[in-house]
Image (cartoon, rainbow, N blue to C red; front, side, top):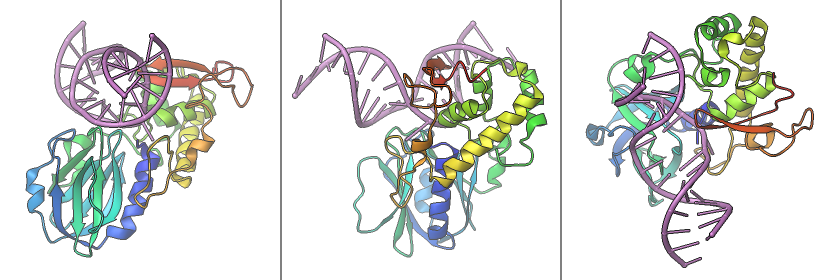
Length: 270
DNA sequence: ATAATAACCTGAGGGC
DNA sequence: TGCCCTCAGGTTATTA
């Protein structure tokens, strides 16, 4: 479900509701996520939520006792519920606040994660080696150029590699490469500095527009207040296999790269 | 060390 | 209606 725009949308939506609130208790119905959810979390109480932030696709709920690290995997979702709303299938955890609100974690495929750390979450093994945020000053053309020179994978796999840059999943990799007029199959070391410049700009533009639209709802993404994201209406290649390029009108090409659906225009993207 | 692939799960949709 | 197959927004662990 979530790439960076969906996680950012989720982050913004829960931030205003839960910041400053106190965790009354955590109800864990299914600890078998990507990694076992620490059962000690069910003993957590009276923890004040100091901040809600995002690093890559991880949400960080920092309390004065430690930090909850939440990842939504492929099908995860957080929503704001109340005590009256009964839990449903796949509602694996409830973070119950003293004001009666519940932050409810739902994840049919259980690829997501809920972890706990009492030290700096950015130093957690899962976060420590992540590449720069796409909107950071560190992510710029000469950085991407120098990293791409050393790698022998194709450019699509490079930009989806979280050690190079975080937050670019399959949808936005396809979209950014179309925007930058670069073929997903190009060897990353064949890119010029000019092309890296175009790609950095394209990644930022696509992600920024998707965040502004509230993310991309393909089948089931809803933000924590129940609203879908509207960026699916603006997708130019992803999900448009067998249709025509919006620029040059020829039929889009559809292939698999590393097992992931890849759609591009072999005329516009060189 | 780097790069391809297997693995973790459930559910939806298509073909027969 | 049901069975089998493929596919899906991610990421790590394993293998070559």
